[in-house]
Image (cartoon, rainbow, N blue to C red; front, side):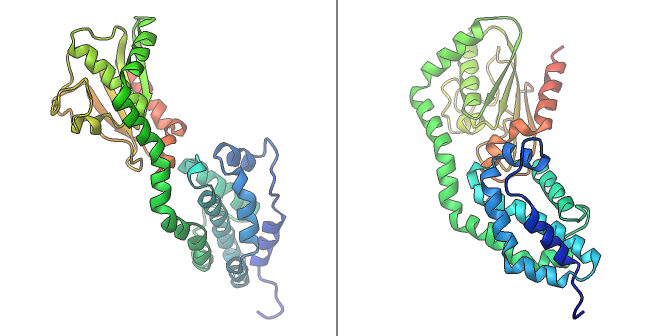
Length: 304
């Protein structure tokens, strides 16, 4: 209505008043720091505050319900733009992302339970420009760049893995009491290889009762016949190999399931978790997922 200030204008007023630098102890600031988004938040705040999409959405949000929708949409755009700018530097779970949206929504006068509605539709261009298009433009290069260090480590291990296996054997053998071994990514590959080689020689490593691999390529490498400790095509692990819990996230392109590979071995159990993050952040997000710790604790309890 001409001459009447839309309710959405108050959301933009609150937006421009949001501080770019947040102190220790501020929930949003702590979340930004722990997820690696802090260096990118100020830029996202400035860009969205000055965007024509936000101004247009605010003008259309005449009534309070529409303004609450706008607050949700702006909060989502802020977090999305920060994640897009951080790219592979982000270390954020879905729960952390949702909590940041909820905190920002509240500070913008909205309610995180309200769906985005028409305001979200108006902000679609902003979200697409801030996240989707850069992702599409950089997809191949970024994925290759981020995956290269891990793939390089795996190739180096294949060529010169004996030293690492002997180092692990020495550390594990320092105490032959019952133990649980946990390996992430290449660490899981090396542990599977070590335990399999030792068991195949009839000299199983003393102590380990449970092996936990997280985001590991060991099943895939075995399918390629690239693990020295296992005969190509074997569907059962050597006698003396401990129980094996393999944790994976289907969004993590460097994690693989083990049960179908070792289909004749009841010692092998897969467990799927989800960080609700894309690759590559999903490969390093396991240690922020409560379900990972809960499943490991359950597997340990099953040993008793």
